[in-house]
Image (cartoon, rainbow, N blue to C red; front, side, top):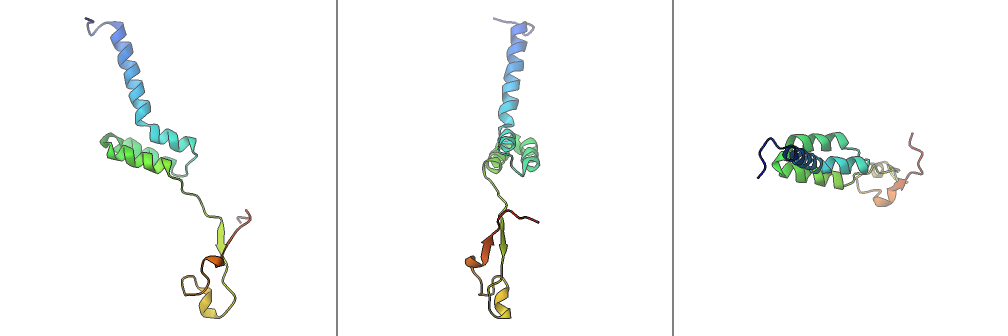
Length: 104
């Protein structure tokens, strides 16, 4: 019906390519919107491996999971010298005290 030189073909082709580019970078857009701390890594995975579809799913997973910094510090329990090391049997979860935002 239309020849390849018809202007509507070029417009539809341009719109189609623009939609595909936006869909291709959805994981990166999600990471930017969520202010993810791995935006550069997600962009790299998306850009380099997204065409494999597995890389795109990996980038989507990376962008939709959140890694948050734990605002806590370890305080040794009162007791002997051997109980002051984490994992030495002393302490436990109660030895981790959440900080009150005074990250110095």
